[in-house]
Length: 535
Length: 99
Image 1 (cartoon, rainbow over the protein chains, first blue to last red):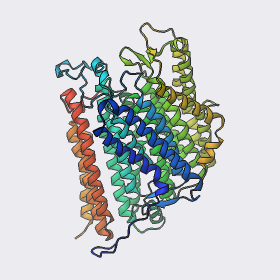
Image 2: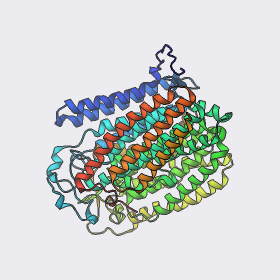
Image 3: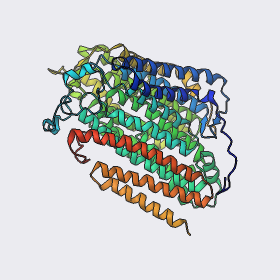
Image 4: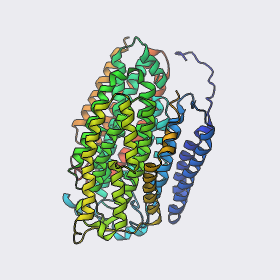
């Protein structure tokens, strides 16, 4: 190991059974890239959708087969770089279920004829492929230009499916990573495809491309911080394994500056991905500009991945020095809840409003992470599962409300929607109530378990603030309900498109899970509380 | 030889990169500043590996290089696609999404 001394290398032992779900997902993503090259264009959509869905189902079956026999304390494999323990298995299940539903939403082709994605990523924003620069739209309507009608026949960019699988593979590795280098690589594997997916909307090309640029530049900036944190912690502990960092922090003569500077930078990178508090600046823009199905995937799955990794880093690596960083996370949680709740009040765009709601929810999740107790761990993971399904279904409903220009996300065009489509308005009301945390929905149970875990750990002032901000946020959810039910429909307002089978399944699954977890949360809570981290 | 100087140099380069991201207006230059940040981290990693006397940090530097290369591919593709639409790589012009 030292310097020039060369020791015989032995191959690492790999627990293929435990890793199988990740291997299936990443393998299918690689196959998807090959299909893109060799399958004729008119067949690609059906082949890619089949391969992706079969892969996700297969990964789910592999996971389901592994879980009952899994060692209770978890295993670490690949030279301890992956820890496949109870939290990792729960988060894998959550990610696979959410991605399966999100993939159906992404594959939808009937709501927007030909699919929500551009046929070639290089297509310009100006109307049609042949639009010259001089036809650039004025700033106010710059996002309004649709693709030329002929474009609809040319199908959609099917590369979206392998990209989704790569992002999912990165997320699954991210929540199981037992050392910071693996975590950094997984962070990039999950982020890079997401940057690209944001820029692929068929309509409103400029908004979509702009959101991709913003997400990319800010995301790369944040991952540079994560990486510098990694380097400083390596300097502190001599290793990037979370367990070794915890040991070093418990008794080391090294400078604490390295430890705390490294920790701070690392956490900034993680908080950015979870769109928390002061690091949320990208969230509203990206959620609004990205294709709605990608926004749904991102809102649900990225949050699960980011908070899963944050739980592992804080519980395994930095529990011993928690008195040093708890104060900072207090501030972060408060800022996040305040920003999400207060700025959400001023939004006129439904997608932007849900983005601010996700920032407020990130604040609640930080409270769950801060508890550092087993009940807090289970509560946070349950909250992630519940929130993921609710927000995914909410974005699926948003994608159905359309006018001549495509999706009508401005709140004014939602006026009187309940008179025209009572069913969709009812479903959306239910989902908004779940986001607000009304009883009989998963949102209520999630908030209840997180807040009671926090109360048990002496975080009472934070819980009181969280309740206040929940009430503030409930105001803007209810405003949408009021607009849908008690306003007169505006002339030329939006109408609800009849969803295709895929989007119907997405909305139905999201709504049913939201209801089930609200009435019978026991099963999911039990699984979430099955055990702690291995390291 | 005092390795600490290299750590200071690396911190300085990282700060220059971070300030560059915040003040520069051209997307390509912003991106170059991010690359500077990543490479300054490499310098830190190698220096720490030297201090520790292990090879881990040097191996990590290779991983970072691969990631940085992948990021260039994705980043330039995104910047180029918006440049084709707008004929401008200034991030001040990408202002349709706000508030």
